[in-house]
Structures are given as C-alpha cells and as structure tokens.
Figure 1: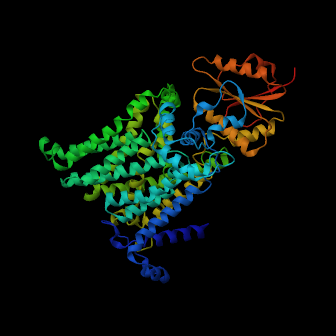
Figure 2: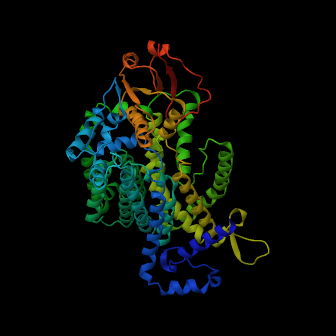
Figure 3: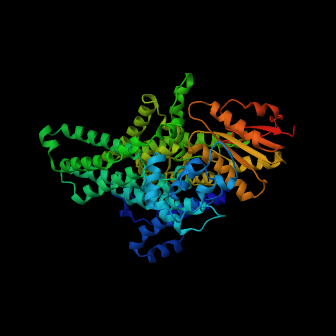
Amino acid sequence: MRVFFQGAFYFYRQIISLLPASATHFLHLADKNSGSQPKHWHNWQTRLPPSWVHPLLIVIWSILGITLRLTNLTAKPPWTDEFSTLVFSLGNTFLSVPLDQAIAPDILLQPLQLNPGASIGDVIHNLATQDNHPPLYFVLAYLWMKLFKSDGGLVSLFGARLLPAIFGAASIPCVYLLGKVAFRSKLVGHLTAAMMAVSPYGVFLAQEARHYTLAILWVIGSLTCLVIATRHIQNRTPLPIWVAFFWIEINALGIATHYFFTLTLGTEAVVLIYLAWLQLQTSSKFSLFFSPPWRRIYAVAMGTCVAGLIWIPIWLENKNRDNLTEWIQGSRVGLDWLSPIFQALGTLIAMICLLPVESSQALVVIPSGVVMLTFFIWAVPILLRGLKIQLQHLENRIMIQVFIGVVISAIALFFIFTYFLGIDLTRGARYNFVYFPAIVVLLGASLAVCWHPPTEWMETEPGKNEITSIGKWGINGKKAVMLIWLMGFFSAVTVVCNLGYQKYYRPDLFVQLIQQTSPTPVLIATTHKTYVHTGEMMGVAREIKLRNSLQNPLFLLAHQDQDPNASTIALENTLNKLPRPFDLWLVNFHAPLAETVKTCVKPDTQSLPTVDGYEYELYHCQQS
C-alpha cells in the first residue's frame, strides 16, 4: 500500500510539474527538489511541445473523469426520478398505466417502451401538463435515446445514463476555464479540473439519468460571465456585447433545464449588489449606475428576466406541482429544526470526501467515519489558510469574494426556503448543483497556494535546514494536494460502488426477497397519488422482467386523492377477484386494511430484512 501511494504521488507530481513556471500569475510551479527527479522524465517533458502540455493535462483529467462516471453505470437500478426522465423523454406518459386493478408487469412497464410515433411536441406537452420541470434536457434525451436499441423491449438504461455522464465529464474542461479565467492561473484551472474529475458529488449526479449535469454546465458558463463582468467592473470598462449576449443565452438555457437555476442567478445578483456597494465607496450614485459596465449588466438582467418569465404561466398551470414536491414540505417538531443544517453540511462535505459511512455494517461505518473526521481535521485548516492567502493577494481577493459570495448566498437561499417558506431544499442533495462549481473553484484556488505555499506559512522539520513541511503531521504542500486529491478519488470509487450516495430504492433486493419468500403467485399492492408511486412499482416490475423468475406476478396501484379509503376499496375489489392461493405484498401502502386482507395469514416478518424504499407487509392468502 505504501508503494502504491508513493507511486501515485510521484505520477501525480510529475503530471502537474508539466506546467511551466509561467502557468500561474502569482504562484511558481518549480519544484525545489526537481533536481532529484529521474532524467528520463525531463527528457520526455523536453521533447513535448509546450503548446501540448495544458491540453494534454485537460485530456488526462477528462479521461479520468469519464472513466469514473462510466464505471458501474448500469449496476444500480433506476429510481423514481429516473423513471420520470425515461418516460417523458420517450414522449410517453404515466397516464397509460391502469389504476385500481391488477395488472401484469408488461402493462406497468409499457411507458418504458420505445415509441416511434412520439414527437418533440409530445415530450413538451406531457411535461407541461404532468411534470414540474422545463423541457430542454428531456428534448435532448429524446433525440439521444433514438441512437440506442431497446434493452429487453425497454428503453436502454445505459443510453439514458450515458448522456448525463458525458455532460458531467464535459464539466471538467469547462471548470478548468472558469478557474483559469477567474484567477488568470492555469495551475488553479488544472487543480480545479482535477478535483472536479474525482468529486464524489459530481460522480453521483453524472450516474443518474437526470438533468443536473447539464444544469451544472450552465452554472459554470454563467459564473464565467460573472467573473468577466467583475473584471470589467473593477476596470470600469464596458462589458463586451458578445459576453452580454452569451450570458443571457446561458441563463435562458439554464432556466430551460432546471427552474432551480434561478437560485444561481439569485446568488449572482447578490454578488453584483456587493460589487456595486464597493464601488459606491469611491463613486457617486449617478456615475456608478450609468457607468459603461453597469449599463450592459442591466441589459443582461432584463434579458434574463424575460427568458425566465415565459416559464411562469406553464409552471402555474401545472396542477401536479404541489403533489410532486410534497416530500420536501412539512412541519417540524423539536430537533427536526436542526436537520436542515446537518443536511446542508453533509452535502458540502460529500462534495470533497465521502467514504462508506452509509453502510449497514458498523465495522465499515466506524472506521470510515474516523478516517473522514481525521481527514477534515487535517485538511480544513490548510484549505482555509489557502483562501486566506488568496485574499491577501490584491488581484485574487475580489474573485475569492465573488465565489464565497455565491456559496454563502446559495446556502442562505436554501435556508430561507427551508425555514421561512416551508420547502426543505436541503433534503435533496442534488439541488446543491446551483453552487457546486463555485465550491470546486474555491478548492482549486486554495490547493494552488498549498502547492507552493509562502515561506511564512511553512514549518521547519527538526534536524533539517530546508523548509519542507506544512501544517500538521509534517505533510508538505505538494503531498497535501496529492492526499486531498486521492481522498476525492477514493470517494468517487465509493460512489460508483454504491457505498456512498446510495440509491433511495433497492427494487433488486426487494425482488430477491420475494423470490426467497413466496413460492405462490404474488400481488404487489401500493397506494398511488402521483407518478412517483408508479415509478416505485416500475422499479420492481423491471427487476422481475430482467430476472424472469416470478411466475405471473400482478401489481395494483390503488389510487387515492384525499380519502385513503379509496385505496382500501380498490384493494378489496381486487382481492375478491383473484383466485387463491397467492401472497399479498403491501408495499408503501398507506391506507386502512381491507376486510378481505384480514382473512389472510400474516406471518412473522421480523426475521425478514428491511429494504430501502420499500416498506412492506406480507400476507399469505390461502384457499378458503
């Protein structure tokens, strides 16, 4: 293991050392111990044309990133939100699934079948009337999935997940440009790209058939425009008109991808207000508000507002929006008021490091938790001091303030929605895409200082004349960068192995349990309110179809609006029509039990395992 770490560190150091000393505006890349490096590396580096160095590094980070994102891409079963993407992207609808009657798996899975007759218009119409998301990603996915053949008669899960994985990998070179433009430093750009490649949060989003990685690309693009605008505000020069148009276009595409992109725009507005306040200290109000950079920023704001306003009527006409967001709404009692704080903190931590703390085995959870705690006790002071050094540098101070402003504003908006509007955005880790690129850029900027720290930040190791250590435990700057990057890499591996950011639903385990427990035909019944509950059963039906193990299983989606007894009546009518014997599995069934169920035998299920996403009760319905 020691040899592995030493070899990995040596390779990483040599890759980064490809950058010339002029790669950063304020930090030197030269390694003081470079004289001890093998000559063959220097010969290879010398033969490499200088113009190839930085593109080669970007390719390396991108290859690493796409490799992680494609690893075990289809190993984890899809969950309800992914089924939403699959169905609507095919131009299909959940309304074709019959309710309040026993149906076969093939009927339940019919919306997942390719539909040659569907059009882009069908995709947009179904989203506008049944879902609460804008259509851009779904239209792209509609065109993309035409390239893939069906998988066992169903839409290809690999094809559906490949698109966000590609978008996720594309964010690596894009965030390199953001870091480079913001700090005028290729080192910051490369370290930012390197951390984006292995971020467990980035890998998590890229392995789901959802639109978040595309939204991240728009966030990166919009933040890049904000950085350019900040430079022009500083210099009191007009914002180039092409930047203004590009900014409006990026913002429009972002809103058309996910409505929560408006939270990113809100953070940018806060930052711009802060920059205006800074300039007010040295300028009159008239000269400030009508100065060249601000006039075009006003135009960008107006264009973005127009691009956003067109979606409001569509969003308001959707009658399902309240039901679909019910899971992030609700009241709190006692310690529940503290949950959003810990949820937000957990998401921030998992953007950098995530070991198997979600495991069901204490022997895995405890060591993983200890390692993560030790890592952050060591790493956080180093990263904070890196940002402090950047704040002391005149040219980089404003950029650090901009990105910190984005992060703090985003978190503040999350808490405003959570505590004042009753919508707990912290429950969905994926919603933090609105400021995720800003976190990665701040991390890259801090690591750039760590790579070559100032002399006053160093400590001299006992018995040595040369200053070689940094912070605690005698770990020097370059080794610190390597260790933080390796922790990100192992965290990414944790995610692709489903040991971190675990799926909310495990239909594979539930079907396996049914196979082991029920030798007779089965009826799987659930209460139904929205297509979310249809998706829960789709996951089970898909696993049954892939395994081809259960004989003639049936499903019941017992619909209910306000009266839960509606589901009870549907279950009663269905049970009276089925021939016995059969096993009844009530899954996520939130309604009073039907009288017919009481004639069935409920076995002792305490020995049976719990299954994530599927709360069940088993009844043996024998012949009377």
